[in-house]
Image (cartoon, rainbow, N blue to C red):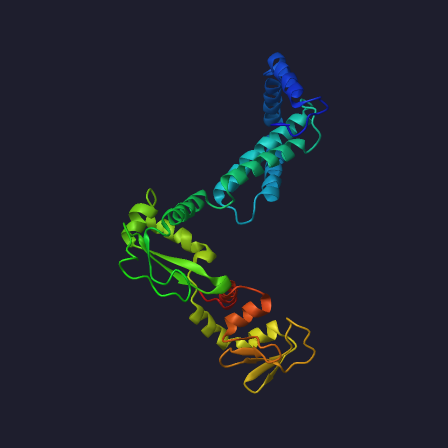
Length: 312
């Protein structure tokens, strides 16, 4: 149906468009003048009530369509869409438009959602643009301008210097993690960061925006595990509530399998090492235990533990 979402009983989108064109030619400006005259009269005689109605409709629109953590820019734009929708509801109340109650607000909501989707989300526009610019630089130059600090393939020997030569170096890259946690870490040279990666933006502000995203912060596994060890008994009581302390170990049933009796699944309360002697599953710290119990990657488990323990 092209631009139309509803043909209102017409045979085709072309027929509806033609009818609208003819109606606009014959009646353009009539409804607007009548609406403004009625609005001006109501403002003069019932100004406080009118403002109360408009404010309530706009507030309801924002509450229904704007996420709680949305940027101020998004809230401001939503307020304008809400006001447009409220104007349509007034025109309906004035019997100048043959719409059903709430139709104007629903239409304004659909337009706002389309605007928000085109914008790319409800966050601050500058933040999204800065992150996109950094991402675009790494996508374009991630292999050619970053010297390898680790082998490209796990377990392989590093490339000799004459082969690993980098033209117009922007920084270095190294492989971090293994298996499902395999990822690349990019170390960007300061001058390249300022003059190329953040060209046209304030480099410090772009870095603060990048680091404000939890998934971009470097994970200090050692600090998180150290904090977890000091609270390990409390964590285990939460994760494995049917367990018990036996000397230096915490014994519990393994929730990942049909474990009927505690005993074979144990966690060392001093080191965090854990093992299921029935299956052979084991790990060396609290992060690996959290990853195992809740089906997370090591990185996600570390982030959740960090948030839980207040490690930043």
